[in-house]
Length: 190
Image 1 (cartoon, rainbow, N blue to C red):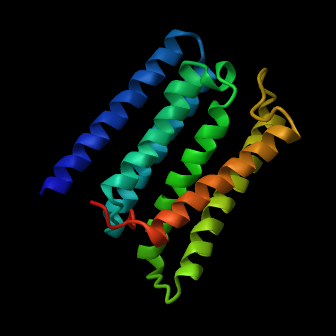
Image 2 (cartoon, rainbow, N blue to C red; image 1 turned 120 degrees about the horizontal axis):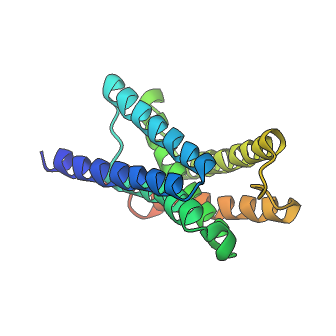
């Protein structure tokens, strides 16, 4: 019961912050960014629906980490312009985002595919590959957005930016794999 109550508090805080961020972006004439946050809210709701229908359960620890990643991207990065005002923000968020999303994706895959590793090294490599693949996919997504939408401020400033993002994704994935295999498995943290 306590886990469900905590989960409701997490969801309430997350959706409240994201909704207020959307309103603030609209109030400051940044409709494109507001649309992005609205899309994130919709995808979050779709995930919660699928989670409920399939009987999946992501630990509250991972839930908070993913929520913080998305809030940092929308509230800090987009609304408060940290991406442009704080040079290392993008790299720090890539580290944190790869960490949280690798944990999230591993947790979901473990449940859906009933994955069990007999060797810790195999599990470590698997979590690393998840984070690296998500990071590479995100870089491709940013590239497609830049080519398709041609924003005034591109998502990718050049090859150096992309390379630093990929290195940051590697660091975040490494931390997720190390924590999952050698410290406290975040999937079991309620």
